[in-house]
Length: 156
Image (cartoon, rainbow, N blue to C red; front, side):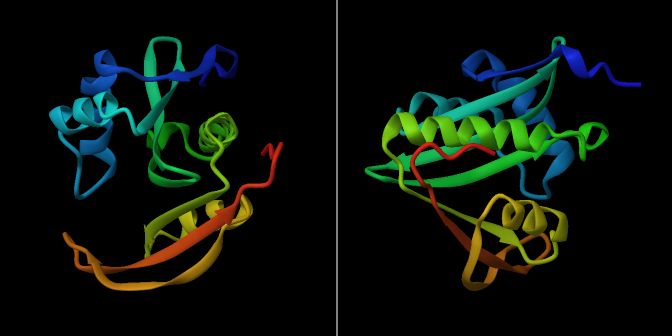
């Protein structure tokens, strides 16, 4: 059984890139490389947040920001920690970052077949904006485009 009291959410840095890349390889068919994650952290236009259970990285979120808009590039949770509120904790931190940076609109794309992610984002208030045909490869698949107007003071 998992110890729920040991969870922490904090900014992830370059030192966490190897752990994030390891989860990427497990979770996604198109994983980001460790170097790519390091470059993202260094870019200055991304916010990378991690969730830990003790010393184990159990999830992360990557948010890009430009002016008053943000794009969620990833929210990922280790399979053994799904449906335990970890994605909600990460999304709550994303919203806090949006508030700190003056972000008023969040966007994302998600694989059409990823029903659990679509459901999670809808629960968070995202609405479907459209479909990008053939956006993903490995396997080739459409992307659902979603967005959320971030009201001031919004919490999950």
